[in-house]
Image (tube, rainbow over all chains, first blue to last red; front, side, top):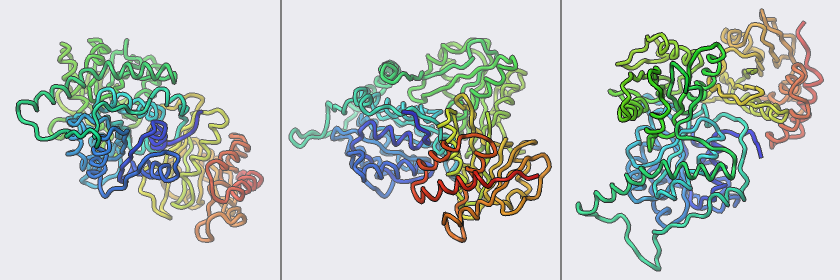
Length: 384
Length: 181
């Protein structure tokens, strides 16, 4: 069934379809309508889940750590300062190998105070041991949240599904909504091999001496190394059931392009639109859309870049003193692959500043005319 | 692709109007994309909402800076210096106005008294009438699309309170909208 719904409604519907059993969330703009919707459908009995109200995001994540340890399927959603407040239990969730799924509706980090979009909140959590997906449409949100549960439960790694505040979360567009019976078939109830059980008591994640701790980290890293294969397999099953699928790196007109822009989130969608318009004018430009930050799809990206293409990366986030986080990842991935070309870094759209078609055309102009700076940040749309 | 901008004040229902019209076009087989202008909303403050319509999926996700259509929920907004640059030359405008509005160069304007229609059907309060659904009926008439039936069905789906009165408001506006000579 196709319906016109918002990004946050898509996320909430996916949670309902996944038959999540425990939800704990604290409202924060622009995530709030997810917490509202889920509380409503738990209250009405439409979803047979326990909704645990808490006084902070730290408590929301801690609640889910407890709940997930008993073997149930769990979900939360947050944004910006709320995600930052979860920083400490995020490590616990991954270290304890709990397949919690969370939506982060991307919002810039204050100060100064802001409610608008950029990705600095979630990219700042890249080292916490969570898988991270970035969506560019409401359809992709509903599909990805459903798949996230299956991927997380197969790998025993928590998973964050991120999408841009307002530009996606509050935008209404047509979405194909999967049937419950099909989702039930695709995503059976969680079957936890290890869980808290009063009949068979165990302690999990207790004090660990140096003779074992490193092996826990090694195993977590191995799970991330297995992730690309597991993610591909889950999406492979998804396409069988629902006729839609996604790649970790998606190419649009990039194969024969002279100038390629790497982008993610809603900005990538506007890049797609711009590439189509510029191709109609005969310009050889292309887009590579990155869907994952963790694990970073290094090999998949390298395979889709063909020297001597001129490469730009569009980052809607900033690690002060370094630059855009996706740029750093792209540079590392391509260097590992033996690529020696320059990677041009473009920072745009911080704190909800609009990323327009003209901004993107300007980026392609600079890549094609070789006027982009290869050794410093190229700021896009900065006030003089 | 057609781009529409809704100009209103907080509380008039501009954002919901963009969602309802999107739903109506969707029912007529279009791809749609509606979104608010991401402000911190406050009763009485200027609010804009956007709607894109196309035969294909809409990838463009920036705001609308020069719309093909302006749907204006309060007539005084048309006099603000920010209004004219926000619609294209030759753009069409539907405005809620009890009397013929002052013409602006380069625009084709239609008007209706949506406030009177809202009062008649007791939509909103005396101080803050809800004029959004009437404006959609007027738009459907002057544009010839989406179909009146689709607008009515979309209102029925998206407006849970005073649904019958809102459907009447759409019909009244459809019948009473006039082109500015």
